[in-house]
Length: 111
Length: 115
Image (cartoon, rainbow over all chains, first blue to last red):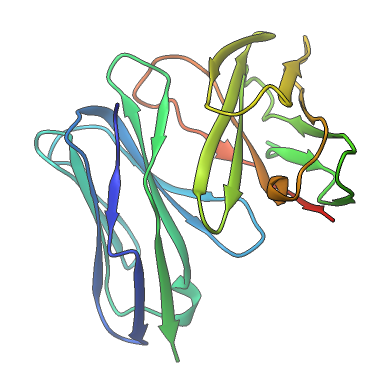
């Protein structure tokens, strides 16, 4: 069974601080997506990473896919209150269309 | 391109009743997946439909069922509602192809409250 573990589960930081969220598995994924979800709304797709070692930047957010395509990280620079939300990673199994969702990281950025 | 739409957005039912939720995927997408999200259990996969056929199924009781129409719109039905069915029900659409860029896009969800 493929599992995706996210850490930390909860994070409360001050505005302007940096943070990193991790998404780990023992399985190989053909791609990995990161989503942000706000209360009462559906997750919004932030990025998809496909190639091992790939790094993608979205303004202050940096996403990296592990070389072996088993893990990923999300780094936020100078966090702002607008970054508050639930961050979810989701992996697609190699050669399949099945999605495996991570356990989620709930981030709160205090002004 | 219009996003994924779900109706209704909010629903209040009582135990024992049944409910039907609707999802319209992004135009051109043939796969619709349904998820249940609760604070305690996180995001749990219910089932996936592709070209009117259920292709994947999660570990939920038979009270949870769904279907997909020829225009790719999907409905989800929950019969004999229980208090524990209170949750945010999310629908996600994708092309459904086993490709690395087969991204899922979510709707805003239907908040179901069972009293």
